[in-house]
Length: 51
Image (cartoon, rainbow, N blue to C red; front, top):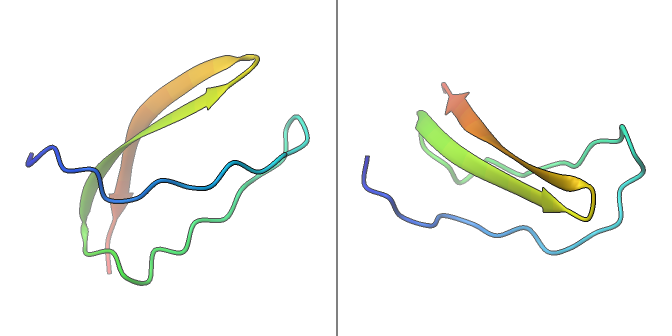
């Protein structure tokens, strides 16, 4: 893994249990590590993009 920051989503209010869209049209296939931070806590994981 290269460990490069590829994008940061601008803060946007999302209701609990809601979802947030991320435009991946400019992203290449691969495994990406994400971090979600909120007032209620945080979550991190891996996301695979296969085109």
